[in-house]
Amino acid sequence: MTIQDALVAYRTYAKAEGKSPKTISWVTSSMGYFAEFLGPRQQDTATIKGNDLRRFIIALQEKPKFSNHPYNKSQAAKLSAQSIETYCRGIKAFFAFLKREKFISTNAIAKVTTPKVPEVVIPTFSEKEVAKLLSQPNTKTNEGFRDYCAVYLSLSILYDDRVWYYRFLRPIMTRILKVNHKIIRAYAPHFVV
Image (tube, one colour):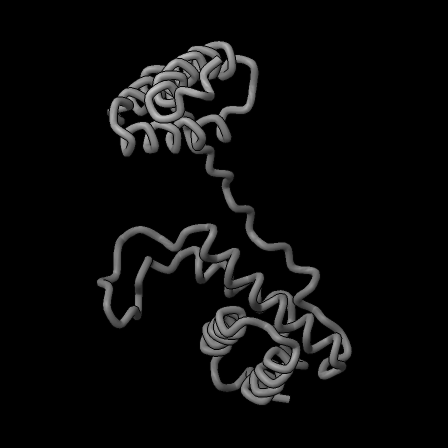
């Protein structure tokens, strides 16, 4: 079975299984790049080996960003490890489908390990940055107080520990309670104790 015939079978299977159009597009485009890399002589799915995927990974690691892109100019930087890993996952998913549906007897691609993706650590806000964020909304207006609460809630979800509580949460909660008490006294005096 050729790669093109297998792609037709995959699209039929994926649509019937309820896969999203983006997932189908991702797998078929990954396989399209892989088929283009293999060339016209090696289009039989039964003859593709794990080493073919390894050669493809090496070729991708040497490929510049946006090469052959219709809108963006090619750049000197290479493809990211995340992009390469995404192509590999699409190809492995395709060959797992072929094995599961018995279009191929063995899945030689399954043994290939995908390249490691570096873990990206997003730096957290410093105390000064948090204080600056919280000082921006004007809490004397309804909209400003709403914005303040939204920023505060967002930050409290991100920082769920004792340091956050004692440095920011307690003082802010005290401030909010004071402001709320003023609002309640102004609009609903019968609720003030």
